[in-house]
Amino acid sequence: MRAMKMPTAIDNFPDALTLSLFASRVDAICDDMGVVLRNTAFSPNIRDRLDYSCAIFDAHGELCAQAAHIPVHLGSMAFAMGDIVSRLEWREHDQVILNDPFLGGTHLPDVTLIAPVFVAGDLEGFVVNRAHHADIGADTPGSMPVSSRLDEEGLVIEPVHLVRQGQRVEDVWERILDATRNPRTAEGDISAQLSANRTGIARLQAFIAEQGREGYRQGVRALNDYGQRMARSALEKIPQGEYYFEDFLDDDGQGQADLLLKVCIRVDRQGVHVDFTGTAEQVKGNVNCPLSVAAAGVYYVFRCIMPPQTPACAGVFRDISLHAPEGCLLNACYPSAVAAGNVETSTRVVDLVMGALAQALPEEIPAASHGSMNNLAMGSARAGETWDYYETMGGGMGAGPRGGGLSAVQTHMTNTLNTPVEVLEQQYPLRLRQYAIRRGSGGPGRRRGGDGLIREFEFLGDAEISLLTERRHHRPWGLAGGKSGAPGINRLNNAILPAKCHRHVRAGDVLCIETPGGGGWGETEEMVTPLNDGSTG
Image 1 (cartoon, rainbow, N blue to C red):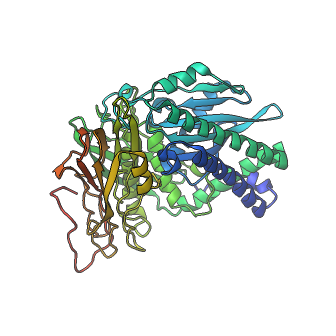
Image 2 (image 1 turned 30 degrees about the horizontal axis):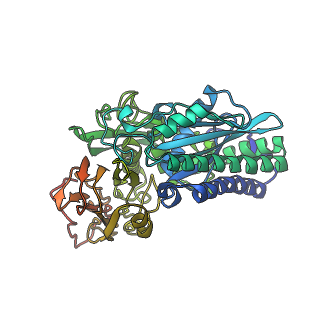
Image 3 (image 1 turned 135 degrees about the vertical axis):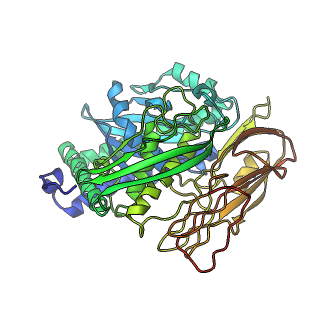
């Protein structure tokens, strides 16, 4: 990383202020796309929880800009887009749709729309958005099943044109809508995604016209060079050497437990290499993930230690490489089940990389946060009572050298909102009986870990539920002498449920989710044990 400086595009760019304005302008286009998507979507999952992301890529599929949306969406897109755009023929007014995890997606509910941006007949880049659909055709409502094969998780959409030169490709539309239980909602949400991309195209074309085509291209090159310099300034602060860590997933929902994840981070003059050799092989359950999802976790952690003004572009990741053996949990092969890999395993990748970096940067890295998106999918497939709903729940943030962890928040790979109680009860046959902080669940320490939350649902009609949760057995770990946070607990009518399960419920049944607390940081004279149900940590 300390090689002799070579001239780059940034050296020829007019000045730092102009580059800063350039970066802000392309970021603003992504924000505009997000506003359109949110305001025109039909489902609460997109409109209220904000489970979507928007980004801009160059003509080769390299990341130029992204809004501050969902890290697991954006990191995986940044890793996979180059391969996607090279595989297809692009024409003006096209839009391509996909969700195949092994061809650029993450898991099936995350549906991606890609649109090329042409100026005077030349391809200048792409605008992209990805949004989570609560119904993508799985047999169980919410499309987050406790699955063992990819085809059990819903409709698999390979990269295919949904719109070709401005015209809808009707057979593709029909195939997607026919797979859902509520085609009107699905059509509304996909139409919102198309509209978001059209907004991005118009804004980017106007910006390129203002900058001039060569000026825009030079700006993108300069932005990437600047991003690389900012990244290097942070990476060079990591002492050279090798750093190891291991952590576990609780189980795969299909009988395999205590799944080992291992990492070795090697830091040298060439950059940072992250190697997951030794990680457990892919499993029958759906905690597997494609390499792009593992990459998203890696990119996120290193982005966190970079200066806040570091632009979100491909140059930031030039000096970071990664390897995971083919066929392991973090580089699973088709047709492995992956529904929980995107949400739960990606979160554990963050814990894994942070645990290794804590050895190199003990005053920078916090303890483990709650470590689960605490996924709940539910609904009914009964005729006349069809509904699908999905949400993730926050927990305790890990404490760090500078302060205690926040309570009842989303952390790391997702930053979605909760669905407001009023929306939940208005749209679904549910009553929220309790929504509270889970006091005492944060890990003790000089800096205490944040507390988890309690969310309790009463069902007003018969339904099905699917839970995909983690940190019910292996606790979120503390650092520097701090103690682990409390594990999470799932209960149905006061009976404890497995971390991953599917159940039929009846009117009057009560589901209670208690999410994990964050790990504590630092020793203190009076260490109080957090809530305990006999789980290990």
